[in-house]
Image (cartoon, rainbow, N blue to C red; front, side, top):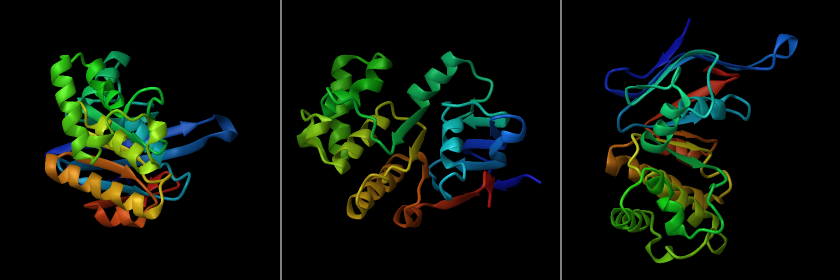
Length: 231
């Protein structure tokens, strides 16, 4: 039987019967098996599970970074499964914002330039782009660090820049994969508080994979994966 979590009414994310395998024959690994759930608008959902449980695979599939072998995914009323690469590029540019454990900033660019990248890709006018970069850096508490490069910032500051960049095109869904994994506990808590505040202030939906109990405490709901299945 398919396990279903959440209410599909008014949902931003809908996942149904999702499956993803790696390898073949006797060496096949079922990374995800028959996973179904929905996430409502304005909801922060933590995805919990041991290493290898399927958390990153799940987020990559929802974000259009990988394709499932079975099942369907819809984000903001857009079909992710079956979409062509142009549609997936548009989805990742305009509908979904990503925050990664390793920050993913471009070392030679300033904080402001890193935040502006998604808006450059969507061809926003320079004046509009610069204004929004300033607003986002203030939002994450880095208004005074706009001209600094990643190597001049602490780990927590780099992750704040990454959060600002993820918000650049005002996405419907924020996906964060272990966003505090490389941070000390105090800095991690500040990043969690920031994610909670952003979701509340903007009515955004967020899916956050984490082992961190503090982030789990700040979530509206927790989805637990065990060996690729909903626990």
